[in-house]
Image (cartoon, rainbow, N blue to C red; front, side, top):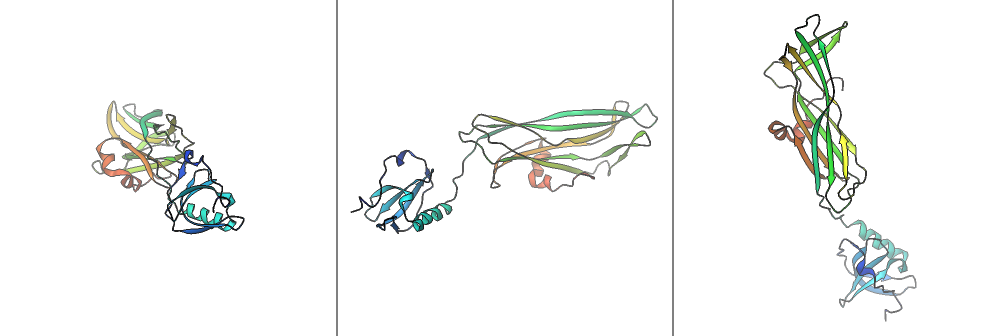
Amino acid sequence: MFRCLFILIFIAFVLPVKGELTAEMHLFTDKNGKQILASLISVAEDKRTMKIRREDGLEFDLVINILSLDDQQFVKEQLQEIPEEKVEYRLEMDVAKKLVTSDSHDYETSNTYTVKEEFSSYVINLRNLSRETLSGAKVEWVIAWDDKVRVFESEDEWTYSSIGNEDEKNLTRISGEFELSDLPFNQDAIVTTNVFEIEEVFHYRDIVRADEIVGVIVRVVSGDGSILSETSLGGAEIDELAWDGVIALREPKGS
């Protein structure tokens, strides 16, 4: 009865299937007006074919574009209701601090005091160990340090001012992100964070006052906001703060 109604295909079983549909029985109509009552089971990834099941349990693979326009729209709407399958990515991240530049200056007219500016960043090496290509993702980072001193030049002389009390924390952070290009299996992406400044004051070789790095947290985030991987560098304090704690810290003045 249905031989002339729908074109059966025998190659659909080798095509990847997009999700599993649980639609109720639907009266499908082809472009010639022929009808069949069946449930929609699945649609191939290329969206050219679909699998249906009749009331008697028999399953058929069908070409979608032979259906009426209304039923083609019905199939499209069913696809929109399927949640995308989550891919379990295996990502490897290596994070290392990199010195960008360092400048030392005599403090005012004294040659016993020295002020120092050290500019650094973190280099992130990300490798995709998944068989699936990583697409639409980004790398986010947040860097924290204890801001103790401000080094600056005034009237052609270098000097400094202390920030807060010696024993109290003055935690500061900067953050940033980088949109990743598609990352195939076993390929690397190298990302460099913003540059941040650590300032120090020395009396001869002894530290008088100095900023202290707390650490960095790096994570890979998918296009829908899911956290695919996260790592930190810096020890117990950065781990205790965690992402939300660090991102809540103040940013440096003037940033």
